[in-house]
Image 1 (cartoon, helix red, strand yellow):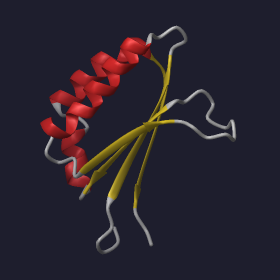
Image 2 (tube, one colour; image 1 turned 90 degrees about the vertical axis):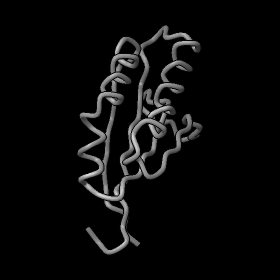
Image 3 (cartoon, one colour; image 1 turned 30 degrees about the vertical axis):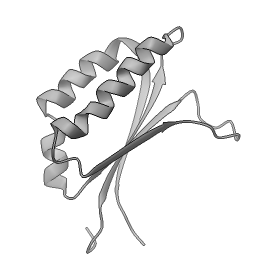
Image 4 (cartoon, one colour; image 1 turned 135 degrees about the vertical axis):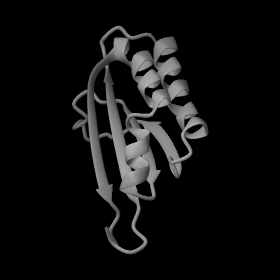
Length: 105
């Protein structure tokens, strides 16, 4: 870890074909509720793919969480609210990609 760097946790979802917009909205709302339930999440943002390049491989949603330490991430990963979110997401998820990195300048 470099001085003053932050731990980024990037999560991308590919939903199963036929997943309704209402179910996708339910997943987005559940993920967006996690920062209010898990104080170790230092910041959070999300969005949907709008790249014109065509390299998304079917991934449509990106969620970007920031942690101040690996210890904070270690609390988040097994947290009961994070696990409960997995139960909401599971029926609709085709694939997931997760990348974590320490920021560098």
